[in-house]
Length: 97
Image 1 (cartoon, one colour):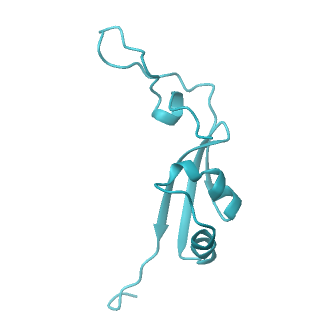
Image 2 (spheres, one colour):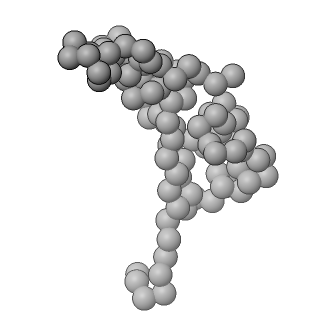
Image 3 (cartoon, helix red, strand yellow):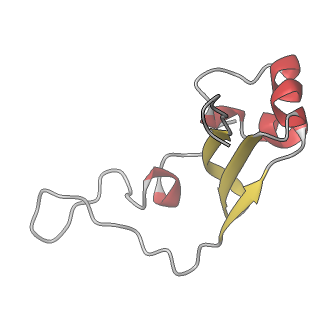
């Protein structure tokens, strides 16, 4: 089940709320929210954050990605709910050390 796109998961903006000037949106306070960045090394964690990817993560592709030490996956969680992610792949070039 995907989390609701309100609060921190949507960049701190609640749908339907406008600011006092009447057109923009008012950010939600995040003083009570807990954010944590996690380096993912387990397939199950990728499945739990599957809603963050363009398509559902594939078991074999996930295992292959996580097994390579040059591949990196970070998941941002807000109150233990996956809210964002970034991947990185280290590259080498023939002309660089």
